[in-house]
Each structure stands twice: as C-alpha cells, then as structure tokens.
Image (cartoon, rainbow, N blue to C red; front, side, top):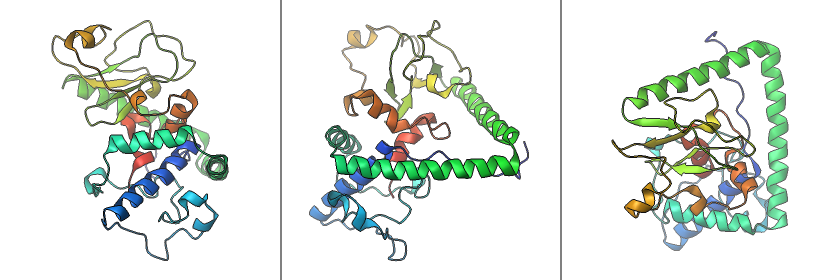
Length: 269
C-alpha cells in the first residue's frame, strides 16, 4: 500500500457515545466542584459556542467545540490525568442508569448530532475514495487486519488467546486485565462450531482476548463456579438493552479492537 495515502476517515460517534461523553463530563465535573477539585477547561477560543443549545442538564458542562468529533480529543493513556472523584466502574454504572431513563430531549439532541456527523463522514469517505480510489481503502482495511493478526499470534506466545465465542446470541463482552472491554460477539451471527482458535478469521467482532492460566479450562461453564469466582462482564454495569450495548461500539472497525471504542466513550476530553 502507498504510504502517502492518508488514513480513511474514522466512523463517527454513535448516539450512545455522544450521550456518554455528555453524561461522563457532567458527573465528573459535578463531583469535582463538590470536592473542590480543579479541572482542565478548554480555552475560551476552543470552548463549545453552542453549549446553550444542549439539553438543560448539560448546558453548564465545559466541553471543547469539537467534543462530538471522533478522535479529536483523545488523550494517550499514559498522559491521562486521574480526576480521582469517582471510580471507572461507578462512573460507568451511573452512565448506564441514566441511559436507561434518558429523556426525549437528550436522545433527540444526540440523534441530531449523530446524524450530522454520519453525513459528514459519508461526504469525507466519498471524497477519500474519489481521490485515492476504493482499492486504496480496501488495502488499508487489509493492512489493518494483517497487523492485528500478527499481534494476535505474537501475544499467543505470552499465553494470550484469541477465542471465538461459542453458542451466543446477541452482544457479549469480556473484561480484560486492564478492565476494558473486548468484543466477543454481535447480534445475528451464527454460533461457532469451534470453541477456540489461536487467531481469528478476519472478523474483529468474533474475538475474545483474555489471559489463560496453564492447565485452566477457560471454556468450561462450571470452571468459575468451582473456583467460587464470578467473572465480571460489561453486562454487570452497562445497559441490558442490546441496542444500547451495540450502540456503544457503533460497529466502528478502526476502534473496536482491545476495547478502544469503550475508552473513546469515556476518555478525558
């Protein structure tokens, strides 16, 4: 692939992603004010000029002008500043609860922004394909898949396995060692006949990455019960509604791996 070709446009944030950004910042900033903890605010020139058009709950939330653009406000994990006012799990639970009872005004607001961003993405994608050709876009996808496949194989040498999910229906999640989610399945996909593979067949939605202990049967349904241990999953604190869970990842191929889509939803802005 020609290295001079820029990356294709990233898929936009979903309705739930947008809601999660608003709610996350609302919760964190409210707790920071209560605890009198200072937080980094964007400069006046970069502050969102349309804050007054948000639902009333979020009008005082401090956000940059491009808060709804995917990847624009990402911060490297090593440079994250801990706000220290609420744990990640508690924050996620609270966002989940608020999403279940989200009011019509907030949902419509997020849907409007998501629709605008999707339209912008389609225009950018059409311009990208027009300039560089569809073959270049396909080559980028293949290259992305190859890179992950190589990493998957390399990780196996360190006892990390990429397992196909087995006998599922709907969207399932598994918590990795870092506490982030890796996608295990998508709705409507047929059950897998093979319970374990050391790599995947090019579909990132069928991958589970978890640490395996020597001699441990990770596929036995009774293995966790025998040890008296409950494996935490995102279903413990994310929406029970399948549509909401799928909205979290948004079928975003570029950001789906290793739970980066989840990170994106709750990253510091």
